[in-house]
Image 1 (tube, rainbow, N blue to C red):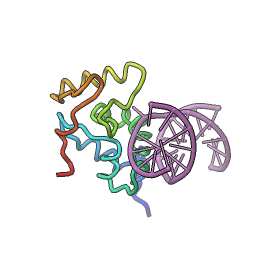
Image 2 (cartoon, chains in turn green, cyan, blue):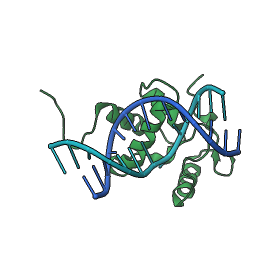
Image 3 (cartoon, rainbow, N blue to C red):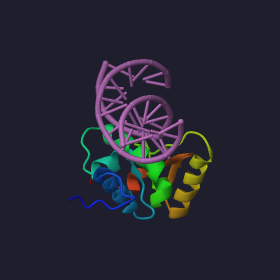
Length: 112
DNA sequence: AATTTGACATATA
DNA sequence: CTATATGCCAAAT
C-alpha cells in the first residue's frame, strides 16, 4: 500500500521541494547546498536534481527559485529575463550583492 | 503506457 | 579560463 497522493512526484523530489520552500527570505543557497541539505551525497550530483526540479516544479509548487543560485553566488540563469528577475527579487529580500549578478552567500552561513 | 530528450551544476583536470 | 565526467528527474512525444 503506498500512500501516494496525486500530484506528488518522488519522495526524494518532494524532499528537495520542501527544503526549498523552507528557505526564509533574505537567505540564499546554492544548488549543491540544497542538495546536501536534502540529504544528497556527492558534490555536484544532487545539484542537478535540484536544478531540474526547481526549473520544472517551481511554477507548480510555488518554490522560491530566485533564492537558489550557483555555488559561486552567481545567478544560475545565464540568459533571459529570469536572471534579472532573480536579482531584483533577491535585492528585494535584502540580499547583499557583492557584484552585478552575484550575491553574498555569507548571509546564509550554513557551514559555521 | 512506454520511450526519448532535455536540462538554471559541480568537481576535477 | 575551458573541457570532461558524473547521474537524476520531469516533461514531451
